[in-house]
Amino acid sequence: MINSQKIKKISKDAGADIVGIASMDRWEGAPKQMDPRYIHPNAKSMIVLGFRHFRGLFRGIEEGTFFSLYSSMGYAGINGTYQPLVLWKIGKVIEDNGYEAVCIPNRCLWGNTDASGIEPEKTGKENYAHSRPVENVKPAPNIFVQVRIAAFLAGLGEIGWSKMFLSPEFGPRQRLALIITDAQLDPDPLYNGPPLCDRCMMCANACTNNAIPRDKTIKITLAGREIEWADIDMLKCSYGFCGSSEFHNPFMVTEEDKKKFNSEKRIEARDYKINPIDGYSRALEGASGCIRACMIHLEQKRKIKNLFNNKFRRKKPWKLDKIAASD
Ligand code: SF4
Image (cartoon, rainbow, N blue to C red):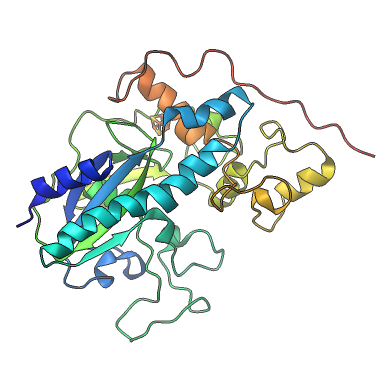
């Protein structure tokens, strides 16, 4: 017999760092294209798992000398290797007990995108040029499940100004995965601890492509609670985190490089310069605002539990000069 307590123990033993449970009715009011109840209409519970990014993943970028870890051990390693392994272990126990486990690692969360191809979660709208519903009553595949909302609904923490999910354990330093199941599990209450985001705006100040506005927000109501976060410019974010700032990307050395990093086409850094590790190489900017600046702030204020013996930042962050124009 499984229950919430057992699921949490199994999840932690399997390697998740944080675990929360939401009842599926907390998704009431979600746009059809983003409503996970269409994935499993008989589902009763959603288990949300958080996997920490080591603080050390950001060290090389912070120092400006080693850029491959956040993309590989962070994005690709957690999404593509670690999460599936942990999800397999938990899913087996759920299915051995006679319930289905729809195990969803972060890398499987792509949607029926809107026309821009990057902001399905902002519009919640179908794009029938991308895919079409298999029956009239259904949304078009894939449904886009917003993991940060899932984590909020499972009581794991809150969504910060930066739109990053903040947990009291790691602040913005985790990646999230889901299990949807027809097992009836006791849900956790929504997060009710001390507020984590204090609107310090460090994230907005440090974002190298100014993707986080200070005065424009998105407001939604989740499970009866009003939530607000900055209306992130996802296009700027998309370019910025791939290294579009010449002042923060040491791999941009010529005008030609500059054009490529700022290209209209969404690039993978690997397209011309950086070898991908585990299929991924994009996260060159090292989340300077939404993770590093926020983490530094939350550590200083001692708002998170995973604290360290030494300060993360010991000097002013590096900043390159403008690249020299080539002939
Ligand atoms: S940096 Fe400050 S404003 Fe931005 S998400 Fe973190 S706590 Fe909130």
